[in-house]
Length: 485
Image (cartoon, rainbow, N blue to C red; front, side, top):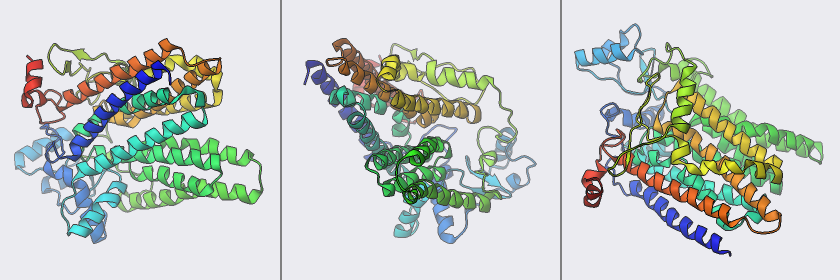
């Protein structure tokens, strides 16, 4: 192993330990009930939505067993937040925040699969005790990290064997540290669970598809399709990754072999999507009267989704805030403060854009070398980046600018950068030697800076100034109080 690779692995091991520690902290219960503490989100009933849904499903219906107040039932437009909050303050009766309200009943707006996987079994075993959501988030985070490692390792072994294990480890760390997991670590509650479960399903589904095609096992392909289709019942926008079904189906049709074998493969790929689609459509229909209605227009949230007019300027605001916005630096630990946002759409505190907090994304600078090495796999990287950008723009237009939405798309952008870095390193090695030492050192530097940014962003999110947690980290730890002086 070269000296550069040894150094890379040393840095990688240190950063991996930091990531493992940060992932483990919430599982140890250091954040109390593992829910955010901001005044805007601090509604105890909100964090029992999945518990309420589990009770409802066990009883045999889809609406929540929470009675809406009479003033909400009588409103002409219950989705007008200003009017809704005014009546709540006037009457002293609250309402179920971030639930779907439709025809006089509350429904859970979030995907049903996390409830079926965690809450329903727990309620059946315990007689209805509240399930600790944070533990489910951590399980899904571990599954995502393990799946990401397997996916990057598979890409190196099968596609870019000359890139070297050290480069592979660096690419995995760049992906893991740049996927905005700090949001789920600091606030591992109801909002994070469907996203993290969707990410875990996506990476393992893609991995099963890749392995199935290479070993020609249609059973694995069916399992991958089932995982990817299940994202529709978890976090529907993340199902964009299933678009890879089209080129995979085309490859099956073009492959050599009898027609019966091709039909079996196509059935394995498509049938799980049909089955899950029917189930999700039925669940939507019994709630909102249409199999295609997921209930987003009925959400009791910060904006009136149904009557809000989207503006193209929100796309530019989202691209700037999520990708390019420089961090706002201060002299006290953790050296970050909330960046100023224009407020043209719904916004929450942000620490800075992905280019600054996830500099591993700059590995795309090697795209030209990657394209020369393997155009087909570089095209896959381009497709992943395109999906990430599409989700970013979708979230900006529909939801606004929220730090947790970066979980939707940052991992796709980082995975695409990892493929580019692997292809570029493999191409350099193919020319007659290991990757240039300065390029390896540059990759180490990018991942190291990203690791520091991850730690600082986590500390900022845990601080009182971010609005994501009620824990003032600097005030709680004497050493950090010294840094903050």
